[in-house]
Image 1: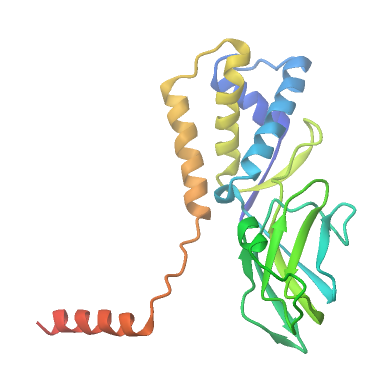
Image 2: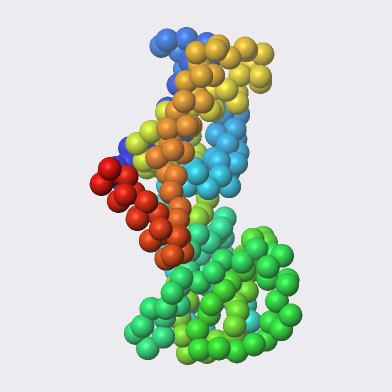
Length: 236
């Protein structure tokens, strides 16, 4: 993914210019910068829980030793950033990768009557995103295999206004415009229809680019029937 580098200072300044709080050639006050830093980081935290806004995932692996669950996070069994969600997973054993692991909802996991069933590889997991470490529950319980899973994590935040972070193309504009809309009420400013529409369009483009179209599984008899129908149409 192509990246562009920016700082919070640049984005906050541009957002304030967008809503007319800061004029051309003017510099936001230290108080404006401090307020803007808090707002942009809160905005990024909120956007992080939107699956369509994610732009990268991290692949993790953990050898299983018969545990019913494991923690993932800053102090977990697997030390890393606490995941927002698990997006996909699979298990391997003896150098062989097995079919994708099913990602269960809380209700689906709760409905499993006997959670201590053992097996050769993990077939399903439930991720409980508690804080500070998330918990991954395994079914069945396995020993001697390895689980591999991809996680969506927080969009990068700015430690300071001078911190430089890399963002995919399109993200800087979407975040800056969203920030301008978010900051306007604090300054008693009404957002123009043009800015509001630009913010909506920029965010839509980012999310549309990230959207993964799910694969449609069609039963074999139905697929055969559909193709036969299409062939008949083309034959005239």
